[in-house]
Length: 146
Image 1 (tube, rainbow, N blue to C red):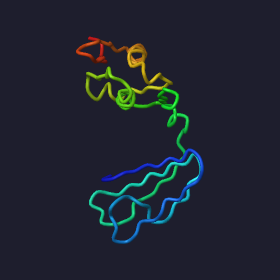
Image 2: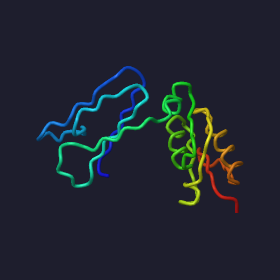
Image 3: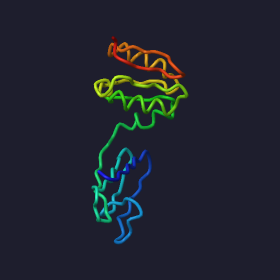
């Protein structure tokens, strides 16, 4: 998909307005979408689409995981390791780097982790998946055992 936007409503209610013909300065649904607390709307437009309106998909994600950052936590539920690392790296000066390609990137992680504790996360993931953690050049490297 060429473009994507997600809106998640925590409280209150909103309506996403429909796209106006001839205005392609952003993403908007074909029809208005009214949202209730806990709902997420994902808007996508296919590559090369000339339509003004995007396709709207509504679901109900786990709100706790979306607002965990407010409590200095990151919550993962079967999340690919690379996505979990990207999320935790947003909050830390000492980044985690995954060494080992796509096989390691697709390992799954579940749990609640402190956003300021990359070393703890790296140690936990290493123990879970039989990886090695090395501190090098101001970063934590996660790699397969040799």
